[in-house]
Length: 195
Image (cartoon, rainbow, N blue to C red):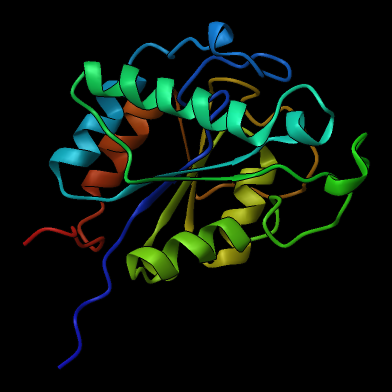
């Protein structure tokens, strides 16, 4: 008998976990949204893997390097851990079709609404995307989740869906990440990764 497919929660970063800063590219710009760590902690306590999936065109624009983005993610994880929360993985896309740096000027499957980051994490963690949830603050996050076969939640922090790039509706809308976590935990058909 095969192992059951476990659910996970994919989180956009900017505007969901940390405050939206136009083209955040330095650690000193990083500010957690109140309640975000508590929401992640609720998911951790339930045994649900949490993975950040974020487009980072700041690299393609030459504002910082991929290593700088990794430094920002290390600091983000440290701040979450200081509040008793953790993420199980971080996937980011440094590409943009209009990149200032030619090496990053590509149309790739990982840049949302492409599903490459979700598929990479699903392969690494052994996840069934049909039993996962995507939480974001933009319509691109909702479109990504839909295209990957996930449930979707739009939070009213960050852009709160006002980017208007995609004509798509989320399965649910929540005030913030903590409320989204509470909603996810109320969905009894999403199994936890820990027995």
